Image 1 (cartoon, one colour):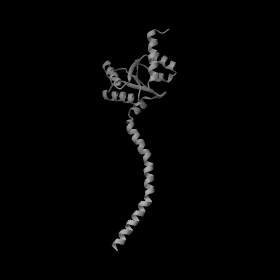
Image 2 (tube, one colour; image 1 turned 60 degrees about the horizontal axis):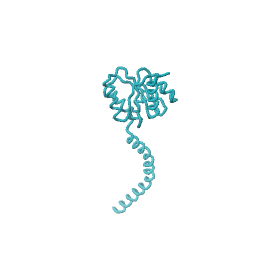
Image 3 (tube, rainbow, N blue to C red; image 1 turned 120 degrees about the horizontal axis):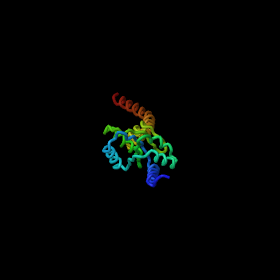
Image 4 (tube, one colour; image 1 turned 90 degrees about the vertical axis):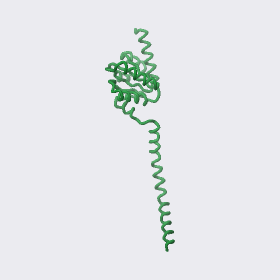
Length: 174
């Protein structure tokens, strides 16, 4: 029978795993306490959490939630980043933190909407442009065919106007 402390830890992990939009697994081996504190602070400022987890308790929580795929990102000394809003934000924060501090922290993977992401996919997610830029790119792509259609439809009229204009200029000179 697990102790009350362990049972509470499992319940807390289950709550966090079910509430979060993305869970990013990290290997914190070689990370100093001050660096971990800085990472926690940076995440907390944006409404995210970083929690060092015990593997066996995490496995129990994942099994009880029916999300056994989470176990694949929990290997060795693991810290989980829980993001509760836009799933891109936690990825951006951790990748930026690793890049700026040249930290020993490594990403082991992530779980996003029930899908397992490899470390390279988390980095790709972090490198996505902001939402507003993606929307503007999409609108540009949607407008391009319409603009081309308008150009094609206007071509005969433009040609007629050019012929008439030359005819008028020719008749004025003679």
